[in-house]
Image (cartoon, rainbow, N blue to C red; front, side, top):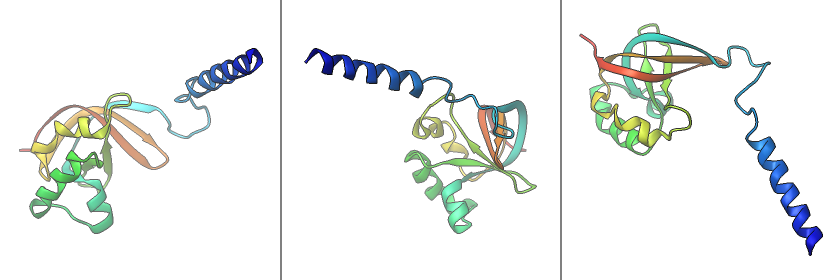
Length: 133
């Protein structure tokens, strides 16, 4: 019995040490963790509907709100057609993160935040947002 408990405890410790070590550090992924403060301008869109169906604009506002409330990804579509997915701080879930942006659904906005780029993917942790003039 004692040997089983020792084995279980050893396995438990070893998996937790490796599972929570340096999972966010990588030396081989191009652009990984390159973050910088930027100001972005564009339309706040629901990414799932935009990518799957091309849905964007005032007629898509209610759907955007429903998707954002359910935790689906939202983002900024810039004039040069780049998409920046909005991410929360750390491991914040998207339902919580999206709440503050729902009132800007499908409108032109200006955001300031930390931009991350990796593997042709753009993300932004928004620190401030306002409607575009």
